[in-house]
Length: 502
Image (cartoon, rainbow, N blue to C red; front, top):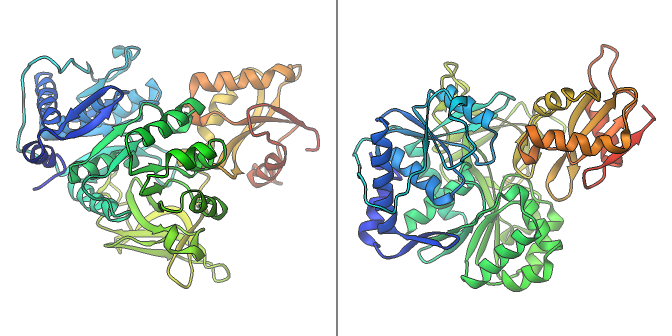
């Protein structure tokens, strides 16, 4: 069975001295990468990792993360990708849920006593050591956690065939070719960042792995990314609508000047605003802007190029080759129904979930609402459930509400997604404070409280204080009414707002 890891050996043989990856000042050629992968596999094998085992990757270093990934596959084990920004509590959950043999990390603060399995520190691979490479390949290429269509974390089983199918789709979307050079900002614990590594491995290209998390880039990070694009004649990169919106507003002239050599830009994770699309096409008229839609369970299901379809800038696009899209029970008036997906990009299932997640016809229920127009373009209309989408990062209200509710000054709270022109949605928290609370300082205290307990993108953008939360006759929380009120009251940055009208 041919797999993505076999391309590591192929390219080391065909392009041994060609640079493959650069992380800050560290560049590895294809021959270097194969050698380091073999050493990492030897290290893991020495810890007892065998075919069929699971290896959790909780690694901040981009190249070390990829070495752990390919080394695990070269042993016939199954890597489990995590964002480096995940909490230690989630790492312990992931290791326990997957029955992992090892958690591989370069984080010095991760306590081995908190884990249900062995903790392995990323080794120094610059010195000679044991090398291992087997011909055993697990049918599952890797696992990634997603919330699926509910708030419960699930480990998606992505097969070797899925990886190759989706990688070829990705290469075809913008017409990637040998000699392209990319910057990769998206995390390697996501199908976005990892997928672009796969594409450039297949093509024998050079990619630069930038050291920041796309959900928390500051102005200095933006300037560094633009300087890198210009200095190294980058031809393309994967972005998000939120990132592109910031580039087109906060760094407009630098973006126009330093990114003019880009041949293509892809945007995923959230819908693009048509006015932003038009602005980008005006800013960089020689650059082709693409978007695609998918999920961890079914990556890159739909795509389009905005340059070619001026009448469809609000749409995600048409189905990718080999992928079918249909709508379940579309509303007769609006045509909106749940998006169902079937094709070679569809996962094998969820880890340790006996119930088949597919319909009898083999369709996957995405949990997204969408509609088709007369030209066959799919437009995403929102989530079927309460999931909040902050520039592609999924948040569920109950997780944040549980943290806020533990604060002694919070009597009641509700977290909702408020429409945002840049990131599609932003998090807003409606809070009923306990009597005697100092409202002047409470917002800052709640923000600090959340930052101690949650990933950065799950911290609400603002806190709005109410006398009482709106509820229906039977006591059900009226989230829609909270969204409407917070959309008018919530400041763009974290802060305090009082509303006595409820």
